[in-house]
Length: 423
Image (cartoon, rainbow, N blue to C red; front, side, top):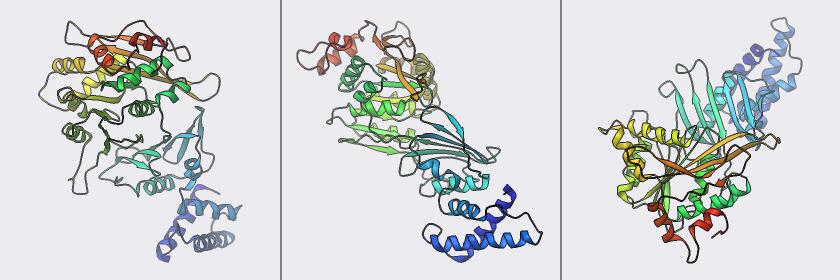
């Protein structure tokens, strides 16, 4: 069956559905009858010489049923737990398996079908994808995935990425079991989360930054107030004291937008012990410079290729706010307020067990003689697959004093860093 033949049959079926009043999601029996009648009509015309006949009419009916009532050719992929990401480029669909293998969809699809699947996925959200909003992001599939879609005129064709993220609740302990952290590094980070420190989690896309941030949140004492802000909700750690907030796009008339920066600014007035920003991209970073004046810590993620690059990226994001503040001042504020940078990396495990995500280093910011960042690694991994070891360095005095105050009686910080004592 050619693409043109399938497209013709599908268009006629959709026209009949629109005029029938049936619900494709509920009236399955009637829908199958309608689709079969449409295919039979095409076959009769083909036998009269008007077009090529179908080799397998029943297969065409099944494909049409999946297309108009479910998620079309993407249905099986969306049901598979081993698929991490789905990439749609016009009529072409590829997907990334948990093992790190990129594969092409072996079921035929058209751009029109894929566009309708994307619109169906976004229909249950408050996000729009149309000529006035040709770039859109949304939480879909009951919060188990995030979709980013771009359509013409911004893109030459439909371009969308669906990222599935596990709703498992990562902890520092589970990250040790997965090989991302050493036990000593996990114990140290658990201690820092009791002291309202400010932590920047960096890494390339897919390195596990959101999962790592979830583990940090899970280590915060229940009595601490956590205010978590995200562009698209991905964090799912239960919060006893505090709440999650999600940005809102503008309405049809252009009003009503609530930006991520607006949310971060609002949380500063809500007496937080810890402000969490799922992913820093722009002007919301500037509001984090105020966190130190509010007496609270913050934790956020940012895309970067190294820990030093992450600090520069955070400064650049803060400058995007357009405030009348120089880069020198922003660097000085962050240099005095950020305690740690945790950098993550990813690759495909040579052993074939899937994608490997590991913490490469935990770096502490230390006092500097100039208005810039100065840091040293506390834990370091030479390369993916090697051990994450303590470097022998101690946190700066300002952080050490805060950590000493939350250490249980009789527990020494040096022993924690050495890995000789969990607490």
